[in-house]
Length: 308
Image (cartoon, rainbow, N blue to C red; front, side, top):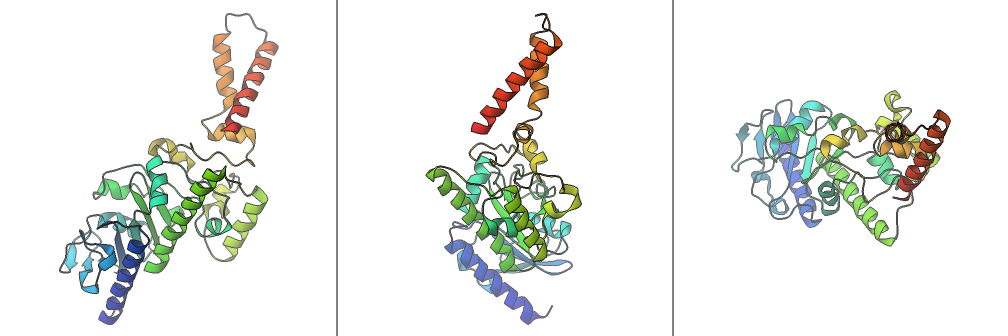
């Protein structure tokens, strides 16, 4: 890449730095931005420097191991996170990490971000995962994105912020801005009384448009052809390990009762049956009476889950 082109990309990085600072996504010296300019070279913003006041000469070059190759200021301490994304996604050319307040609130609460609410979010973002927490800066922190990076372009970092990535620095930033606006809308809707979800048919239409427009989504792949497209199924298996639990935003009303039970921790009927069987083993209940008791308890549990 020519020096002229590299200089222009540095200017683009400075512009995105001004945007994230102006939006309140990066207080003081928060956040970092990178752009890959060759197979082994990445432009990187400096540490301990406000992203709202960058100039092109502040931007360093690092290699794919994190070693700084050039630049008058020390590279960001969180560059390893960016490099791990590049290693796992050869199509990605830029990464933006910052702390947008509303999305970061979900990161702190470890609340899964619901789907099937806004058409634009379904098309541009889809299911958004939350990582497990690791101290920022090291390789263990960088590795937290590995289970998710191939299935999304934006990730919520537990108790930290967000990281988004794309084919250029502006597109990488877009996903963060869309996500934070969405999280803010969810919070406002919650204050007004609740969130109304799109139904499965309406959401399926959006996924078809997404596929038509060339945006990838795991829900459009054979692996997830039987998933509940509104139930955060893509990353649900990671919730226990990452400490994610749905608390503030209930399951979509379109979800079947048996699915709600499953999503909230397993097969309620089986759990109830085991518990009742143990408790009544010496009570002399007939199989028919035991089955009726299990059914009654299961119905009550499911009704309670639907109210949450």
